[in-house]
Length: 116
Image (cartoon, rainbow, N blue to C red; front, side, top):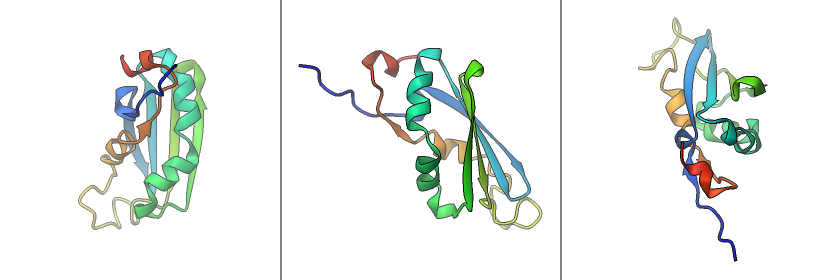
């Protein structure tokens, strides 16, 4: 009998970087290993990212897949309270948003996926 693999946080399988353009945040997620790519594509979806960032009230989330790089880029619209010049946020560029995305729970299909 096979037991289900317990959840790990996304940062176990990938790293991320954030950039901004106006009131738009772009978060890239890059798999540490090619074997993690199918799990990331399956579980790091536009819907899950929208739910994770619901408190920032994005007007839209779009995912772009970069399979040859084992990476994906998320564009979140209207999450920076007006952007660098218009926001009173402490993190006006939204650089910390990648850390939030890396806290997303992932359920690997294979126990071997939980290691780099």
